[in-house]
Amino acid sequence: MERFFGEKTPKLGFGLMRLPKLPSGQIDIEHTKQMVDLFMDAGLTYFDTAYVYDKGDSERAAKEALVDRYPRERFTLATKLCAWLEGQDEASAKQQLFTSLERTGASYFDYYLLHALQKGNYKKYDEYHLWDFVKEQKAKGLIKHWGFSFHATPDLLDEILTAHPDAEFVQLQLNYADWEDPRIVARQNYEVARKHGKSIVVMEPVKGGALANPPQVVRPILDEANKNASYASWAIRYAASLDGIITVLSGMSNIKQMKDNLSYMKDFKPLDLEERTVIKKVQKAMSDINSIPCTACHYCTAGCPMSIPIPEIFSARNQQLIWEQQERGNRMYEKATENAGKASDCIACGQCEGACPQQIDVIARLKECAENFD
Image 1 (cartoon, rainbow, N blue to C red):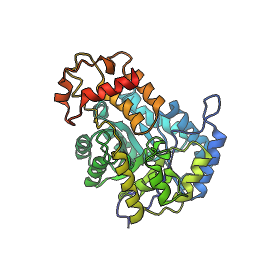
Image 2: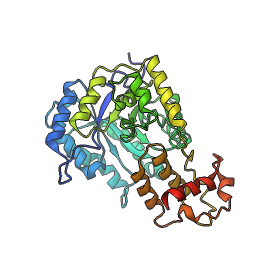
Image 3: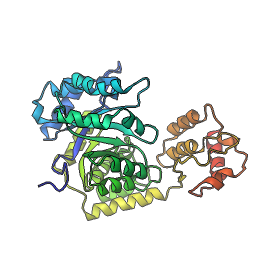
Image 4: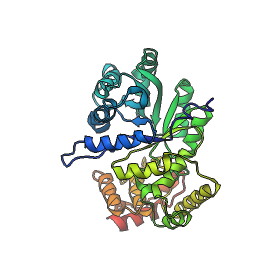
């Protein structure tokens, strides 16, 4: 008997959001077919897509590369309904399920998710009666299991799970870099989901690929522990080793990534005590980086006389400090300040520091950002 829903599900899932592309920008179906075959040959079963991925091409690729080529009972397929698309009403939101069934040719979905719930959109799912809708479709056999993906704070997750206790699972962003990050609050979200008895599908275990190429301070720690293990393997195995995990999604983009993931996830073994100690060392090394501990609460911006987007500027700087991605940080800064104040516009009035719950030396850190960006 399973201790939790999905305990026996293979712990690597194939995320279909970052599929290989042809020079034309279209998904490379033949390459994708090879990846699907390797995944299936390894005895793995969980595929994840969404109505909005690649404007529907991800679901269409799932049909060509998977559904049309394998018996339906050999794999499980997940997709998602996005209630907050511009110009959408209740009827068009509900229609997404039937469009997804047509695109994939799957006849039913093993896992169906209300997509990307967060503070700015979660009420749409109530307004459009989508919680009742997914339960109705489950009763009709079009959905086997239903849940939601989530991108917000523990208090909101607790509120949603309290209001909807029959949700069967939650999809969360969990990785060792975000575990104690005050902006992502991964550990707290995980603990809320488990408090409610919910199983978890993990997204972003490699943090959008960042942990496959971790900061310089991290690499010697991992290399010393196991020079033959890929950096991505540490991240994916960390997430898969948590209790209550259905599967860990990896958005693989080529055969090389697929083969690496299969090398350690085909016969998955959780991190042992020594390996967990290594991850703690890595987390400590990352926490010692002189990053800006901003949680993006935006308390600082309400009274800023210069209309400086302080959290967004700090996020851009952290991209450089933590992840050593200079150009990406520059692009983030340019976007954040395109129609707003720049870091160098700060007049040191101090209202932001009085409002900051993290007690950040905002003026000094903005000066640092100005020296770097402006």
